Image (cartoon, rainbow, N blue to C red; front, side):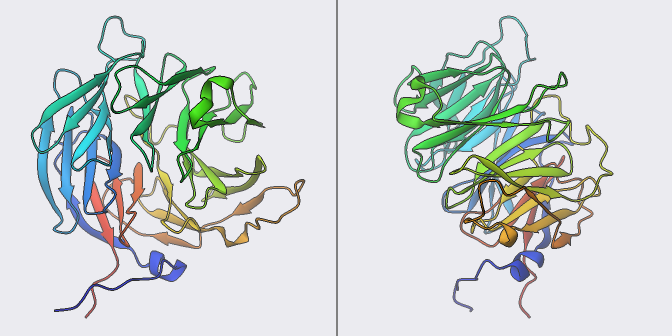
Amino acid sequence: RKTPSSVPVTRTALALLRPAKRLSCHDHASVTSLDFDDSGQFLLSAAADRTIQLYDCHKGVRQREVQSQKYGAHLARFTHDGLSCLYASTPAVGGAGPDHAVRLLLLALKSYLRYFRGHTDQVVLLEMNPVSRTFLSAAADHTVKTWDLRALQPLGSVGTARAAQVAFDPHGVVFAVAEAPQPAAEPGCVALYSTAACDRGPFLRVLLAAASPDAWTRAEFSNTGRWLLVATALARHLVLDALLGRLRATLEVDAHAAPGWMRFQYASAGAACFSADGRHVFAGHVDGSVALFDLAALAPDAADDAPPVTVRPCAMLPSRQGIPKVVAFNPRLLALATADSSVVLWSPPADD
C-alpha cells in the first residue's frame, strides 16, 4: 500500500487534472454552488431541484442528501464546526413575502440550529470567514451583512448600488465587495472593508470601466491576499492587486463565448477560482473544457501605472462531462470539482 505524499502544486501537475468521477444526484437540475470543507474530504453542492448533496471526495460517492423543498437551496457553505453548513433559500428576486433567512444546518442530523433573518430580498452570495465563525451575506436588497454564527442579529451592514459579490481575505480581517459595471456606462466598483469596522465605510475603492459587459459571478482572494479574482459570465476574468487597488490582468480564453452561456434561474457561485497556491486560476469554458491560467506574469513590484496584462491559458483541460459553470479547487488535495447539472470530480491520472 502506498503511503500518502505531498504533491507540489505546479503548472505541470495542474494541467494533468482530468474528470475522474461524475455524480448525477440533482435530477438534471442546474447546480449553482460547490464548496469543500476545510479538510478537503467533503464537498457540498446545491441546485435548482431544492436539494443539498454531501459527497465524500476520498471515496467518490454521495454520502447524504438534504431536501429543502419548502424554501429551496442555494449557496451551501461549510462552517468550521464539523459537518454543518449555511445555505440560502431560492425565492424569486423581488418576490413578496418569501422567507429570505439564511439557515444553519447540521448535516449529520438534517436539523436546523439557527436562522439568520435580516435581508428583505433573495440572498445571492454567502461567504464563510476562513478563520472564524463570522460570515458574509449579500442580497438583492442591495445590502451586504456581516454575521456571527452564535448571534441572530447581523454584526454590521453596508449598502450597495446593486447586488454584489463578496470575498474574505485569507486572514478574515478584510472583505471585498464587487459590483459589476452597468449598461448605462456606470463603472464597476471593488471596495475593501475592515471586517471589524465595516460600518465606517470602505478604506479602498477601485473603479473599473466596463471591463466586462456581462455579470460578475464571483470574487476571491488568493492565498496571500495580494490578488483578487473577479470572475464574470464571459470568457474574460479580472485580477486586481488588492494592496494597491489596481487592475493587473485580464484572463482571456477567446472572444467567441456568447453572452449568457452560464445564466441560471438565480445567481451561480462562479465559473473561475484560484488554485490552492494562489498562482493559478481555473475557469470553465462554454466548450466544456477548463482553462488553466498561470499568473507568473504578474509582478508584485510592478509600477503603479503599469497597464494590465492579458493572460492566455497555459493549458485547456478537456472534458465531455457537461459545461463547467461552477468551479471549485480542493484546499487540501490536488483535485478540482466542476458542475453543470452533475458534479464532476477531477484528479491527476492514477499512478501505474
